[in-house]
Image 1: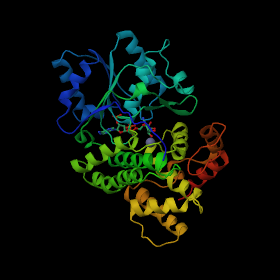
Image 2: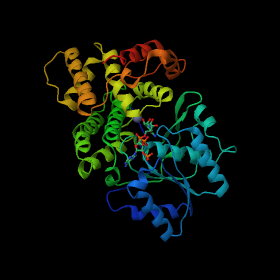
Image 3: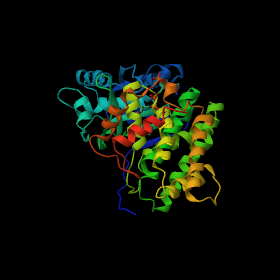
Image 4: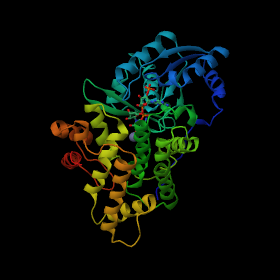
Length: 392
Ligand code: NZQ
Ligand code: ZN
């Protein structure tokens, strides 16, 4: 068990009647607020009107950056940074899913650079310690961006999608009302749910140091929560209990409470970000296709016990098999969850993706080295895993 520091300064307002606290949180940071949102879902579900009237009632001056794309582009981030510079914005308010919150974080960081360009920060891997404050109103349980230090920004000109991290990017406050996610379509619910699941599995669970029992139990509980509540939310979009469980699971998965000194991996995420960068696919769907193939690829005598434990604890795979057989049953259960329960298409071919860019994607994901984790993987390994993803 490794030493660790836990520090998450984000103040979360969770539940139905919390948005009335938004003006207080914003005004503590300043009066000029840039509202960042996506393609219009917040206008349809009433959140936009709610924010605008709260701002008016409380003397908050609102500016807007709308049209943030799923897989947010660096060019959109830069537009937001330009508004911040021109108008002297005090705080960036994101209202939406992970893409919107990530864009807002990028805006907040770029606004304090000389040229207002986020891409040099992203491409050079700068750890952001200076940014405008960010406040988030979450509408999609998925990425954990509402409580974490990361923003994932895409540059479609160069086919790159890269994480920008920094202590200054953690939102100062997050508003999580499960009702805001009632309008999410079933497909987005499924993709978001698998993203939550994979954050635990990819980042910590199989990352190597499985010696801290409390953390393993907590990680399994988050994954079980997704398995239990995602299908309910898909069938009954307005089921508060289901949406609430998924929303808090989203935050728990990446706010570092499950981290506790574990050795990090993120093979599936690195592989998926390449897929989104080349093909602009939905992040959680890409993860669902990659993850069972990745587990199949890394399965051997050394990894079988951990994979089998995962199957037992998360999918109630029976005890008593020898480890490799038990691990295969765990992977079968995971595949059934992704492609039957969540109903996601199971292969890259289904998404019209062929092998044309696999080598480039694999090389870029490995950045000249290896991806660490329960098994270290090089570019040749990644090409083989991508190839496995072509078949059902
Ligand atoms: O743009 P709008 O109109 O808001 O519609 C969005 C979008 O079309 C819609 N949506 C969101 N909330 C809704 C809703 N529609 C109806 N009702 C609602 N309540 O859903 C679509 C997808 O939204 P998006 O924000 O793209 O989804 P998600 O939250 O899954 O975010 C995905 C992005 O986050 C990155 C992903 O790579 C991807 O770019 N990630 C960010 C991470 C982080 N910051 O730590 C970690 C993750 O691993 C991930 O990489
Ligand atoms: Zn993710």
